[in-house]
Image (cartoon, rainbow, N blue to C red):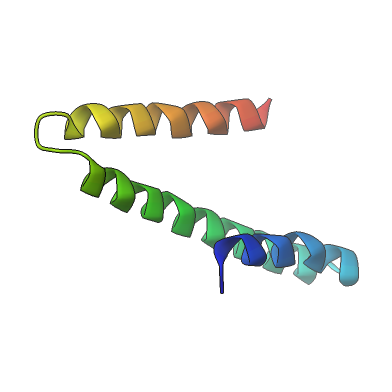
Length: 74
């Protein structure tokens, strides 16, 4: 199942069933999809980089992910 469909299901799930367990289940689904996205992006990044600039690419990716988490919390 594509990741975006999993995220959509996870976000609609608490709306369809307004119980506390549905909220926990939806956050598990969305979090798992987020992990799949991060690992997929790291794989693509590792394949796109050569030995000279691989460290630079991964450090920029790490900073982008950290900045996204920081902005999301605000």
